[in-house]
Image (cartoon, rainbow, N blue to C red; front, side):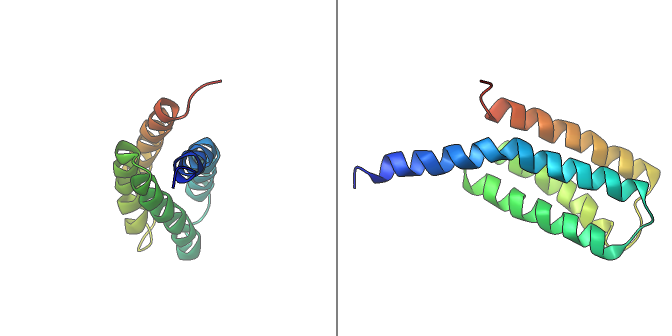
Length: 110
């Protein structure tokens, strides 16, 4: 049983270390989607990425990050139906900045 605690810490560390890369991928996909003609499948792919990260971040105890990702997920889900307005796009980009700031507070700088 004593070996489980260090193993759990290692799993959490690995997850945490991967957060910046995952957020960068989401931001890159979001910016690309906004620059091209609306396509439901591409927005759906981003939605799945967000949904999975939102759930896992909450599971790992990063509730603020999970809540921010949820807000972005809701906006992206709306974009599955129709192309986002200019205002929606600006809100999504603003949320991305908040998400990046939340990750910077989570991931220790080395």
